Length: 275
Image (cartoon, rainbow, N blue to C red):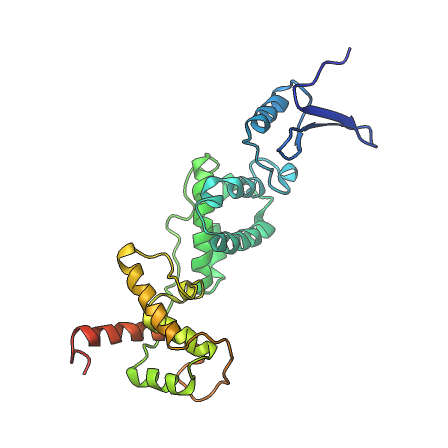
C-alpha cells in the first residue's frame, strides 16, 4: 500500500520514469523537494518550504563537488554576508571577479589555497585590479574560514603595489568660470556641474539625485542640500540638451568640481583665505 504524502505534497512520474515531489500551497510558488517522502533530506526541505524559509539553490549547486572552490563559492553567494551585506553594484563587481577566479581554480580543493598562490595571481594584475581582486577574495575567504573550509588565512601577508596617482586636479575659480561660460544654463553638462558645485556630493550620489530631493545624508545637512538643489533648478538648470565639446578644462565635471565647491565654501566662510 502506498504511503500517504505529507500535506501539500504532490507527486508525479515524468516521461523518464522518475518520481518527482513538489510542495504546493495557495499563495506560494511550487517547490520541488529532494529525496523521497518522509526521508530526513525530504522532511528538512519540507519544513523549510512549509515555514516559508525556502531559498532557491544556487545554479549549478548540484554539480559541484564538496570541498572545492566551486562549492565554497556557491555557499558564499547564498550567504547573508554576500546577499544582504553588499550593495547590488558591489555584488556584481565582486561576483565577476570571483567567477574569473572560479574558471581557473574552481575544481581545486579550497583547503589547499595558500598565500603563495594568491600572491602569484595578484602579481599578474595591475595595482588597481589587484586591489579589487583582494577585496573580492577577502569576503570569500572570510566566509570559507567561518565554515572551517580553511584553517588559515591565505590573504594574510599578501603584498600589493601601491597605486601611484597624483589625485584629481582641483578646479580653480577661473576654470569654473570658463566651464560656465562654455556651457549655458539648460544643458546637461551645466546641470551636472551645478549639482556637483551647489551640493558638493560625490559623483555617484549626484547621478542618483532627483530634481527636488537630496541623496541620503544626515538630517542636519539634508535641508541645506535641498535648498541648494532648488537654487540650481530655479536658475533654469533643468534641460537635457547636449552641448558640443570645446575649449574647457574638462569634458565632464566630477572630482575637480567637487573640490572646487570646498574652495568656494572656504572663501565664503573665511574671506580672503584663498586670495
